[in-house]
Image 1 (cartoon, rainbow, N blue to C red):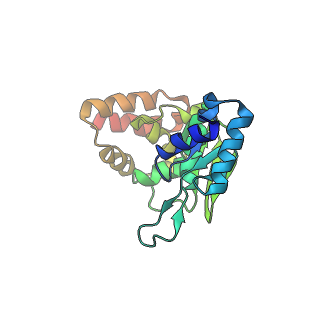
Image 2 (cartoon, rainbow, N blue to C red; image 1 turned 180 degrees about the vertical axis):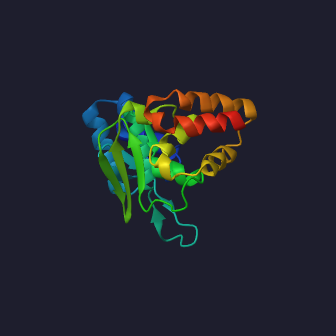
Image 3 (cartoon, helix red, strand yellow; image 1 turned 90 degrees about the vertical axis):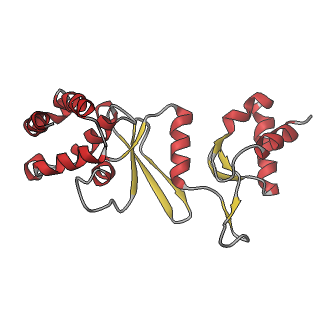
Length: 205
């Protein structure tokens, strides 16, 4: 079976609207033959090249079946980071908004990452990747990480204690979990200016 036929079989098993990297197809043949195969599938309309080295199966829009949606810039950014082994997290302003520490939602979707600064665009949607130090990307997918990134974008002198209480309540942590998270934040060098507020919060938990 040709590389193109093998690639077509694999593509048909993939979810529509979810971007994928060409690197996952390289075991099917030589790099050149795989690149040619995906190029052919793109010309057929089976897949769409959404970024250098990344493709997606388009899917029809439910409300207007004649219109096909390829994918989102946000999905491409996440797959790009995963494929290259970069850490990635929503920016601190987004974390602060989700936790109720600020009322205004960020205008642009921005991610902090250990990878290089860049942008992804699909239609009018733009997602910006900002390179950040490892200290800004600690505790990924953990409540203390979301709190860390949110606090890093706020001024402790202009933040009322009630704001921290709101943030912890939105995380639905038990008393023991909240004390554990607070202790980690208190000992975080990047949050030294928040130590006093965090210590008061810990005593109140």
